[in-house]
Each structure stands twice: as structure tokens, then as C-alpha cells.
Image 1: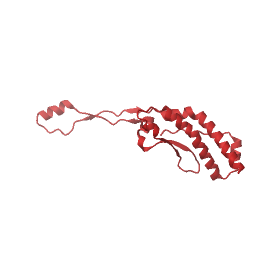
Image 2: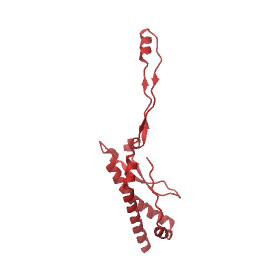
Image 3: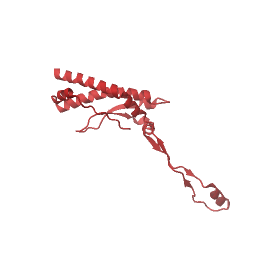
Image 4: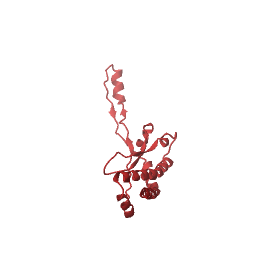
Length: 162
């Protein structure tokens, strides 16, 4: 899928509050808030994607990023049932089509000769991506960030009260 990332900086109060928590607990709170914010992006992506059968829309999902010490996040993915979503999103190259050299093949066959293959190949063409999900992420970015920050503040407050 197309990678779209949001970087949240400049919230010193949140940084201080998170520094007071254990790192594992802080990551857990971040993940919960990120998932809630990304649900807004998921809803926008489902509304943006054109669909005849609805299969692509139904098979969009949020998944946690692979564990890392440096990064943390949530990813919008296509489930295997809608494998074609990534092709529509990012584009693809067509296979080189074969064009038979009909004049010489037909003439040789009529003369009784065995014709191995005198086919020429056409060029590959690149089909451009439609970037539906990237567009949805850019549209939903302000609302997703607002929801993320509000939820993170709420979770930190609840954690500090415990």
C-alpha cells in the first residue's frame, strides 16, 4: 500500500505526561489513541473507494505496525480477499502482449514449412495508480489528528488518576 505517515510534534505537555509513565504503558496508550484516530481515515477510505461489488470496501482493515523500538503505529491494509486493491491504488505494468507476424507465418505454413515462432512482442505499458487511499488519508488527516490528541489526553489523564 501507499505509505502515508503523520508526525505529531510540539505538544510539550503531552510529552512530559508520557515521560512520567513506563515506556511500555506509554506505547500502549499511543496505540489505542492511534487506532481510534485511524478509524476516521478508514471511514474516509471506504467512502472514497469506488466499488461495484463492495468487496474492496469490506476488506479494508486496520492492523498494528510491526513491532519496533523506534516506531509505533497503525496501518490501513487490504485483506487477501481484495488483493486487487493495491493494484488499483499504486498502478501496475501490463504484460507485453504478443503480436503474431501473420504474413510470414501464414506464407511459410502454406508452403508446408514448420514455423517455430516468429512473434514480436509489444511494449509494456504502465497503468497509473488512482491513489484513493492516499487521498482519503490526506482528507481525514485533520480530524484523525484531532481525535488522536483528544483520546491520548483522555487516556493519560485516566492513567495518572490510577
